[in-house]
Image (cartoon, rainbow, N blue to C red; front, side, top):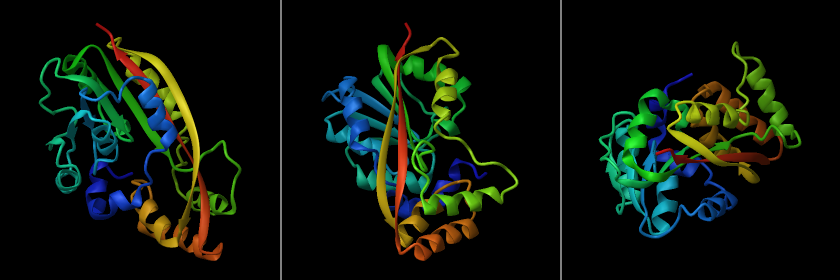
Length: 245
């Protein structure tokens, strides 16, 4: 599998390739009191700013942390109201008690939590929230479509088995709370779907760090074989935590 800097090679198309986070997830974030205007938020592993944009639109003051130079440049261009720090989440210089909210959107699996969590605990105010969420491309609980059958055939030929991403919410929650610095307040799952054509599948699957160019082309060809458009059933999970004083 490629490392997180894999996404640097897709910086120009990443925003177009990745579907936005579902509206139901954002509604839940609002219910958690995390979208109040004036709150100070840090978005870690911000990429091109899909989460940053939602936070800014709600009236928050946002610091976005992104290690990739090209991704950070895209972030600055798309969201000039955000303060952008070009750094890994673990090494970012975050002042003490500077944030009410920390967000990690589809990036926590790249981070060293032993390094990150103590620094994040220091950067959040007492009782501050940590929200960790992730889009799951291929909902394992949904009906298997002909396109997903073709995707499964591609993955089955690998020497390493595919990942069960919905289960990652349980493992991630355990990892986030093991230190005792943060406590879970809620865990939510969301199901949604999107129609994608051949070009969109090629763009999206091309951003997946565990897919080779040949596999991406094969997935795109499957869309063509299946009529030019496929309905993809996806999911998202959201873990909400509070800083333990």
